[in-house]
Figure 1: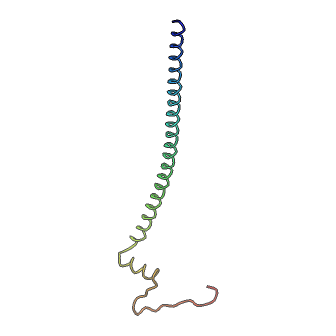
Figure 2 (figure 1 turned 180 degrees about the vertical axis):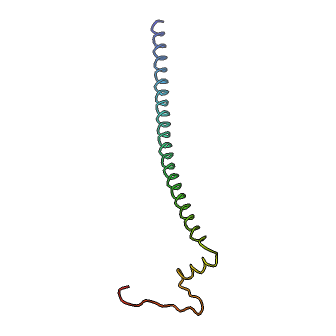
Figure 3 (figure 1 turned 90 degrees about the vertical axis):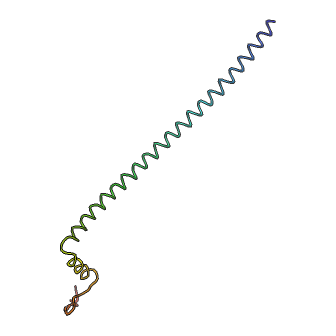
Length: 107
């Protein structure tokens, strides 16, 4: 009878040891998974913050460029602006206007 009790106690201890080892292993794997997920998420957040800063800087540059262009455009009336663009960019001239080109060497 005493040997039977020892055998039953030994089986119970072995069963508990298997359960606790499996639970410990599962717990370690779960903690590892969540740790890796957290690190990956943090890296993605930092990358997106960098991207947001770059986009914000581009936005500020574009606003400054738009303001500069608006000042150029507002330099006179709409007709004066159109005439200036036509002369400078497109090379147009007014009717009956004489245009002289400098063809001397060195210029």
